[in-house]
Amino acid sequence: MRVFTHTHNGVILNSMTRRRWIADQSNGTTASLTGDQAAHLARVLRAQPGQIFDVVANGFLHRAEISTVSDREVVFTLHEELEADAALPVHLLLAVFKFDHLEWGIEKATELGAARITPVLARRTEKHLAQAAAKRVERWRRIALESSKQSRRTDVPDIDDPQTLKAALSLADAPHKLLLAETEQQNTLTAALTAHNHFDGPGAEHNRALALAIGPEGGWTPEEMQLFTASGWQHVTLGPRILRAETATIAALAICSALL
Ligand code: SAH
Image (cartoon, rainbow, N blue to C red):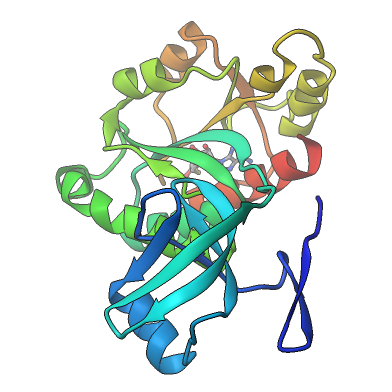
């Protein structure tokens, strides 16, 4: 990764350490932060015109200079675009399970770089959770946004509306699709990814894209596992112990980020 250095008030800052903000609005040459972000910049950080920050506007990372500050809106002039650190090209199909655990999983998956999360209403997703999921998704998107800022991602993972498994399977267009299954005994995630990495050739970038599916607390049913198999998903294990779904999510993404 390139590191950009600039001097501000005699302090060397670079894009790894400079505070990063995700703009609420942008027109391409200016960008602004509103609401809590503006209030925080204005009151807590006592932002001043002329200060330089990194600002993500319309999905692109820029060096940006504050032009005006109020409690309600901080406006930046966008300077040069900076090299963004790409998300991990991983699309998670994440079964809906107990919301507090699921939300923790979404936060951690965002930190670890997941590009997209599709919540799945699995057979063993508890009824009341399945019913409440559609209303909860806005909160999941907010968690992903907050976690993206905190972890200084330049993008925010897409969180789809909750889907049935069939619908989720048709959304998963990555060329490699791996079902995390505690019933699999041989094929490990590490082995599957190592084989996958050997693929090199035309379209290699797209071909690095990966979909991972993690089941609910009760696991995937045998019928669901067959549906995955019929849709071209390979079953992989994370080892002999049964992990909670959120632990499986984190472990799988950590392995992906080490190997992809
Ligand atoms: N049915 C299980 C629990 C499922 S764990 C039980 O015996 O209670 C929830 C999800 O985490 C699973 O559907 C799977 O996607 C993932 N998972 C947990 N442990 C795993 C392992 N050792 N290998 C692969 N995936 C695992």
